[in-house]
Length: 190
Picture 1 (cartoon, rainbow, N blue to C red):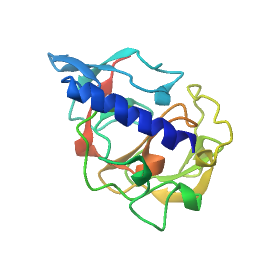
Picture 2 (cartoon, rainbow, N blue to C red; picture 1 turned 135 degrees about the vertical axis):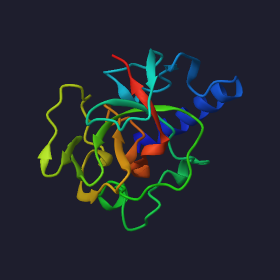
Picture 3 (cartoon, rainbow, N blue to C red; picture 1 turned 90 degrees about the vertical axis):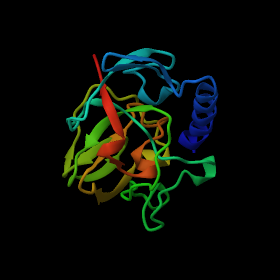
Picture 4 (cartoon, rainbow, N blue to C red; picture 1 turned 180 degrees about the horizontal axis):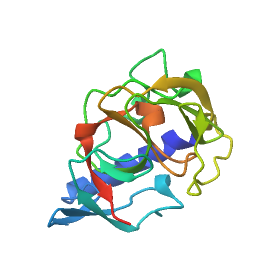
């Protein structure tokens, strides 16, 4: 699985940044945070190494916004699985169960599902409430198994489904489930 291999590299990069006082963030001031993209998960929208400004906010994110958030804490790449053994990519279904603990690192992903939405993924495209997303920002999915998860899940109340634009090389809600609103720290300024 290409995405799991990429995740191991992301964990290492974020661990190194955290050890240097970072976690993907290089500075914070005046209600904003500057984040350096540590992986290709948001390409072609945001390339690896690009710096973006995040506006810190408590407002609920809108559909298709890019958000900065704390992903679930996963200590080992082999634990990159849905906490519900009846869901997840191995069963051709996105993960619909939230993980219990957040990491201190910062990720950037796109909001593709709001509370109460039915989410599936077909050929890398999110199917939200039965309608395929029509967005120009996706990288080709390359036909890997995580690109087609046709059995839908429902996003729980107070949670958001966050997925990278490079669906073939992104570590996101498909694997570890929806993210609680409280873990979302801001919106990427464009």
